[in-house]
Image (tube, rainbow, N blue to C red; front, side, top):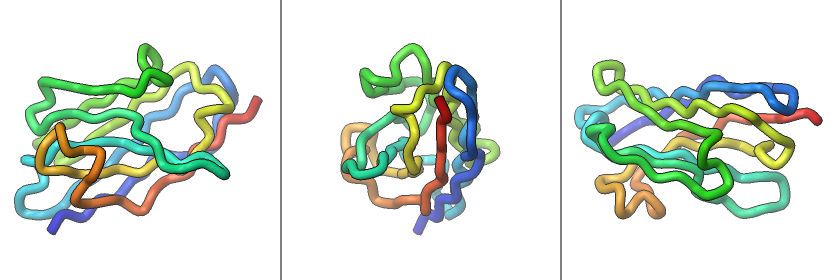
Length: 121
């Protein structure tokens, strides 16, 4: 079992930045590919970014490329999502997810509870 706890959400003005953190616990937490998803009001959950367990490979949704950056610190069992140049369309609940492989991150094995990000225009 892997438990995921997100933090770092909040209210930010358009153009601002936030860094989300996801602390993973469990015996093999550091061996999972990790990802971030989000669900905006009235919309379905969408993929945002993912990183392999080594941190050597990343994927991003087109809507966040060049603005968001995913990274991980396996010594701390934590994955981060640095979000820059935020706009109102980034307003959503952000979820951390873990999957055995990067290729299967779209169907994660574990989910966090989510953290709210609100961007005011």
